[in-house]
Length: 115
Length: 115
Image (tube, rainbow over the protein chains, first blue to last red):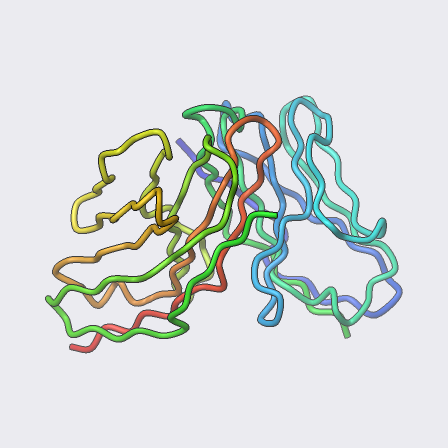
């Protein structure tokens, strides 16, 4: 079974631009979560989608948004990029996020550099 | 709010020896899950081991085992017969049971393995 895939793997943007990152979950997984990883703040939860609905949200400004499609693929968008948005963005999928299906499996990440 | 603490920023072990990584967490919930993830230089987050809070038996996966002390809110990872490929960042993570829980990560422990 193929793992979680993320595209693109690397991205360079300038301040003020917007960016869209994509995540394809493991086949059959319906929950997709996004995390931001930085040296200073560590791993922080952005949001989770399940069946095309945002089910959970972390403490990030409204410039960070996401969506999920009917095939469970997810995208996250960051508008008006700031230097501090430079980070590794990790996507994780799980079957449903409940019970024994809680385990999240991660993709390789998208490294975003904002200049 | 739930928190996860890894008190050892860096650890070192000799190849073939055993090392234990520490993790403590704070929660008032009774239904939750605990995880250890490994992040090698490739940045791919890999699940090492999982523990359900309602299970008293400590989880084991080959050379990896945990010491889960629920009352003390402690969840340490023991790596036996350490191998060079074990060198990585190790993150302890907590997830509340149910649909609303997201992963809360510790700051990580960088493990070096000496030949």
